Image (cartoon, rainbow, N blue to C red; front, side, top):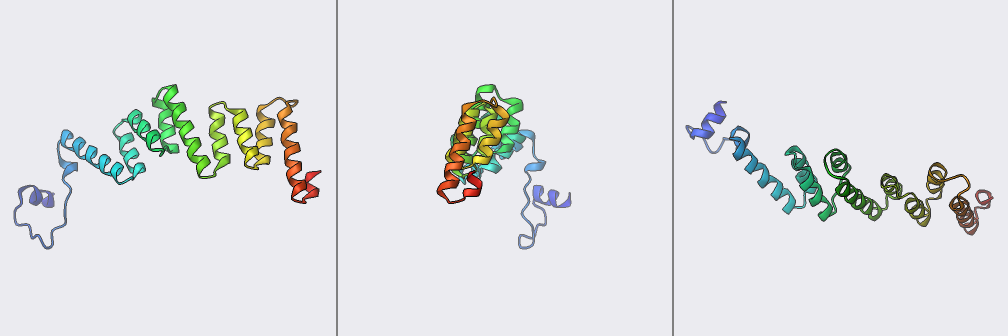
Amino acid sequence: ILTLAKELYATNVDEKTAEPMVTGLYSSRDSFLSLVAMERATHTLEKHHHQAAMLGIWCGDVTTTLKTAIETRTVTETLLSAAAMVCGRDLYRAAVSCYVSQLKESRDFVSAATYMLLLNEVHSAIDMLVKEDCYREAIAIAKLRLSPTHPKLLEIYRLWAGKQEREMQLDSAV
């Protein structure tokens, strides 16, 4: 408290030894909101999107924060969790789609498929996994989500066996 008083009233402060103090936490709500808005803007300009998003969630501004994350392609699992509770269906689906694209770009195809299933894009998830040679995962999803007689299941087995045969892994191809 003594440091705060010295800072606020600038009495007997030795500038060489005084630690800089951020008084925003002790200011009025309006001043503090202004400080947080400036901090969010700074994080955004410096491409520290995660920090900006956290401040957005803390402020209760999930919708705007999520829209910004979609625009900047910086959607996170935390934002998706918050969005599921607060945002409308269309915005949530847009956020999940954006996150799926981010996961594909980072070559995390299994996670991308998992989020595609949240959008009920079962066939697209399976097709993507097959395209990326993730046959085990594609078969697992097909067996869990499709009819046991669905032709896609047999197609995946054939494609996987063909790949194993081409790679001379004949024991696995049988």
